[in-house]
Image (cartoon, rainbow, N blue to C red; front, side, top):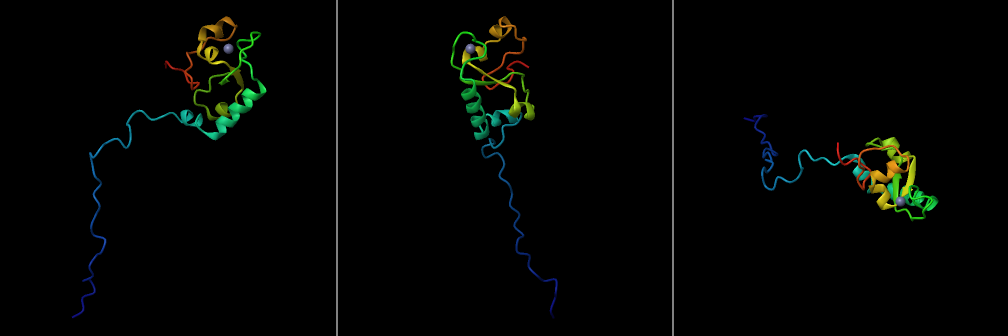
Length: 123
Ligand SMILES: [Zn+2]
């Protein structure tokens, strides 16, 4: 009389993921590079503040005195986590940081135009 297999499965309702409700959970193909997030960290804010405190003047405007606002990677870090966090860094004003021409005039190496986040804009 007793059938051991007559148990009734409880969790038999399989949830079906809703498709196409908005489609904006992930923006496919435009994954943010990791270093963009690093700039938003408290660690970077501290590091930047320390750099600007120890070298408050723009290194490229020197000997002109311009207060620096940008903690610049002397060598492009290109997403290298070690370079990003260990530098070397230099303090720059915003216009020097954005000006590749001035970099060359001052005897620096030409390098790709660097965006405000320290990443080459044209690749
Ligand atoms: Zn400058």
